[in-house]
Length: 252
Ligand code: PGA
Image 1 (cartoon, rainbow, N blue to C red):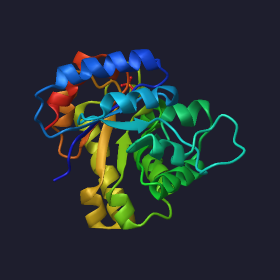
Image 2: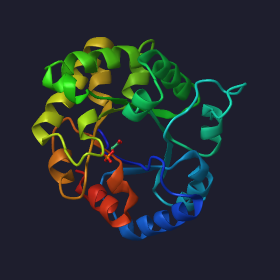
Image 3: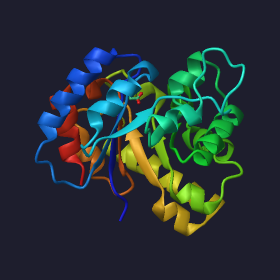
């Protein structure tokens, strides 16, 4: 009922030339794939045009990693939702912990971006997740609740039903330390519960909730087998075609 989504977050990797190669290899790996997963790749801005060409006439879809909330204006260095929509992006990752940590993005800013993305027909992949200290202090649920309340403020239940939330514990990103499948399930179920409290049961049942943080070909099946894990946001392992394809095939 909820279609699994496997999204590759390439971060600051892959020139346009390398993007063409990697997407060619990925199509080769996935040729004949008939499983349930929707597969998205999120290259850096400068590779989006090359990626858009490469994914034409394939089942791969495109996402961006960030976005400004205005359509246009004097915002040097920024990229607007209109620009991403024109390139054929379906998804946009918003509120990634690296944006929160290194670029001082807070929930209010992320919320403006989420609302702008929806206005332009882009599907936000809203990232939430706790720091290691927060997990150790047992405040994971409180942190997630605040991030959801802030990030989703002002949205309608219908809008929330259509979006994607990614649970990414910050201590698991790029560290090789994955949340256990039970921990991922517990927090994803909590996210669904909070969405239900804020927006009602229908939105909670429809919203797709991914897990992200050191997902790889070896641990994907067990993580993706959890009832409330509707897919994966994959960083490092999405840079290798065979490894990423194996994660796609693990989706049920
Ligand atoms: P990772 O990154 O898979 O390299 O841990 C995940 C992410 O940051 O989205």
